[in-house]
Image 1: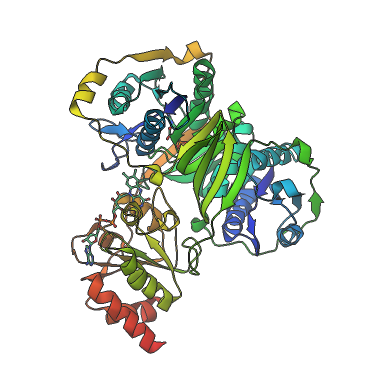
Image 2: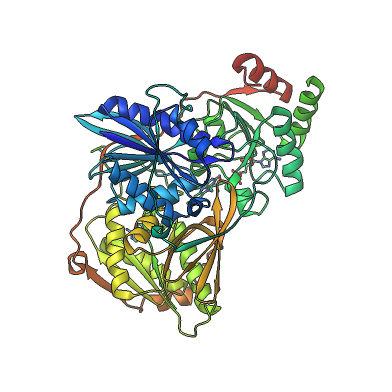
Length: 322
Length: 253
Ligand SMILES: Cc1cc2nc3c(=O)[nH]c(=O)nc-3n(C[C@H](O)[C@H](O)[C@H](O)COP(=O)(O)OP(=O)(O)OC[C@H]3O[C@@H](n4cnc5c(N)ncnc54)[C@H](O)[C@@H]3O)c2cc1C
Ligand SMILES: Nc1ncnc2c1ncn2[C@@H]1O[C@H](COP(=O)(O)O)[C@@H](O)[C@H]1O
């Protein structure tokens, strides 16, 4: 079976999320006797295609009309590439771009799709996929029926793939600018706030919940501690709802799903919807004034106390050490 | 402008989910259901677009549509109590998978001819996050997923989107599909008189087969496992001890 993996990139190269998706793609290839082909799209992305070629053969769609690649165009390129190479499986990362664009491509390709997949296995001769449902309350193994299958991979469930295996050539896809759909006009994109690592990519995430009373406190306490640890920051939905943190910092069922080496939950109660986003972190530490807070059940280390007293202390200790 | 709002009935997110003995489904007996929270956000936005006359047209209609069993009527009435004008129920024995929901919605769109389909980014039971994208692809309409702001301007709709990178703005011609993210608005609660009034509003029932749709199953559940915590929590007594343990025992700092 041919497996087409759609890769995302930024100005530095392949996104980490896509390399994590490649890890599951390799597992899927191994258990289904499949071969990987990669797809990169954008404008002036020769360097991305070269980087991708270290993993497998690459289709490259490189033209001005794909610069800010909207879902109508991306989905068409993905669907065309899938048909051209006779893919039986199309994979991508479960990022906001992947959900938007690979999702739409899934609609063009017949809708046999699973999102946020965390494992695959052969079960009774069919390829089965594991994904969470009901805010992570249930882990399900599912089978997809149709051709091709479309799968988006939960990046935090995998380590990023390293180059190797069958390195490949780069084939330029013939896409005519004039045949691209023109339904969605890209207008602008804001740049990400602050210089901290992305919550989905950081090795350590310091996350704050309703205990934090305003944005100044969030920046001083959560941000301040994160900076001492070289960490990214996250938050519960309570703070997003209150306008204290931006949406892209929300960890949970309806936000980001993360699995850093250390997740430090501060003043977060541990609602299932929040747990859904962080319970697979390697180590979880929680600070909460309520000894009965459910988060402690899902933590390796717990400290009962007032965040407003403990965090300044932690920041002071770390800055003395550093 | 006519706005169609697909709305799903989902288990109350505050309830604990138990897996049925078959291991293929959840235990539904005694489980309270609610309108999918993201669909409540879509309904709220559709009502505001209608009532503020945001699209610059005097006539506005908000039509909700549910696809599933007869029990859906309760959530559709909740939507009408919030202020939706009409409700459609496409009756299917079980809620179909996202591909079939999208195919049914496509047929409903062809009947109803809305200028906008406004729906949730995800149903919080299966967390698929697929139907909006599928529907836009099937209709060959533009899409804007994860919307946090919707504005109209000379026949176009401009949508602010929540992405991994922050905020993005796109614009599209109508008709279009938009999926709602959390910050789009805060849905209203229906007042008691509105709830009473909604009891008398019609819910039009359509049989799935009358739409010319034969279900094409795409997703089969093989096995379900419950979530269990594998951790045991070590209580530490101070911040210094926490840092020391993280450093010495786990080596993460
Ligand atoms: C459909 C749906 C989807 C959702 N998706 C998400 C999601 O993706 N992510 C998410 O996070 N939530 C989500 N939620 C919301 C979730 O159910 C909880 O409401 C939310 O996670 C609570 O946030 P919190 O823990 O910060 O606040 P609370 O539950 O209010 O907890 C605050 C905690 O802080 C502690 N505290 C208070 N003061 C202090 C102090 N001074 N020092 C130390 N501790 C203190 C308290 O003891 C308490 O445990 C969703 C809800 C629904 C219905
Ligand atoms: N059975 C259904 N009936 C009506 N609308 C649905 C149904 N299933 C999904 N939807 C719509 O599709 C959105 C996304 O759902 P999903 O792709 O399943 O996560 C939901 O927020 C609803 O607006």
